[in-house]
Amino acid sequence: SEISPKSVFIEFHIEICLISDGGRIESLIDTDDLRCSDFDESCQWYNIENSELSWLRGRIHLDSQHMKIAAGTEIVPKGLYAVVVTDRQMFPNAKAVLASKVIECQQGIGQLRLNYWVSTGVRISVCAKRTGKRYPDFDICTDLDPGNIPGPAYVNIQDFEHQPFQIFIRANNFIYDSASLKGGFAIVDNIEYYADLCTNSLDKVPQEVFIFQFIFLIFFPEVSFLYIIGPIATSRLLIPSFTSAFNFHLILTYNVHPKSSKLRAYAKLLNEAHERKIFQVKYKS
Picture (cartoon, rainbow, N blue to C red):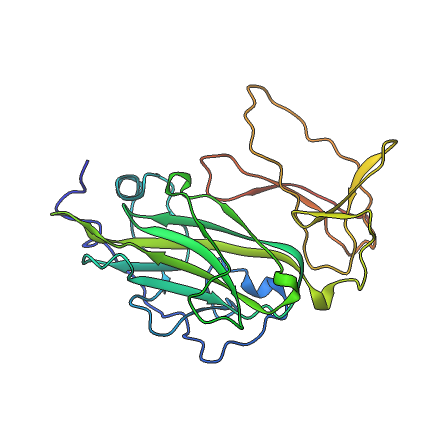
C-alpha cells in the first residue's frame, strides 16, 4: 500500500550535521576508528567531494508502521545514525558516498559489518579500491540485499596484497516517484570493521594456520580447536544462521591469556536490530 498523503518526508525531522568532507583523508591507525554507532566526532567516515547527495548525522522520526511501508521492516533505527534523504526524484546515478580513512596495509581478509535501511528502489553498495586507482574505478563492489533489511550485512574486504585502500559506502537510485513519496532515503548504522592491520600483525604466520573470517583456524585429527594469535585488536567468529524449535545451550571450553584479553559471545534474533551479549569471561580478583 501507498504511504498516506502526509508522506514520510513531511514527517521527517532531521537533526542535520554533515559528516565532514574530510579534506585530505588520513591513514587509519586502528580499525576501531571505523566503528560508528552514534556517528559522533570519533567516527572516521567522510562524505566525498562532488557527490550529488550527502550523508547526514542525525535521526529520522519515523514510526514502525511508516518504516514497514517505506522499507519493508518494522524495526526502526535507534539513536543517531548516518542518513541520506531527498524529497524529489533523482537520476539513478545521483549518489551519496561515505569514504573510510585510508587503510595503509591489511593482513588477510577484513570484514565490514553494518545495519541498513532503504526506501523503495534505493540501493546501498559497499565498495573498495586501492588508493593508486582513480575514483570510481573500484576493485570490488557488493550490493546489499534490500530483502535483508535491517541486516546486519557482512562484506568481506580483501587485503589487496598489502597495498593502501579505502572502503566506500554508496547510496543511489533515488528514483521513486508517486503522489505521496518521491526520491527516498537510505540509513546506515552500527558500522564495524574487523581486520588485522599490518602494524598489529606478526611478521610471520605459521603455515598450518588458515585465515577464515578473521579467526586463525588450525586442525589436527586428534584434536581440533580455534585460536587467535596476537597482537590483534579484535577477532570475530561468525556462526551461520539457524532455526531451533527447542531451547539449547552453547557449550565451549576456552583458555585466554593474558587475563587482560576479553572473550565474549553475542546472539541476535532475526527480527532484532542489535545483538545481545550472552557470555563474557570474568576473572576473580
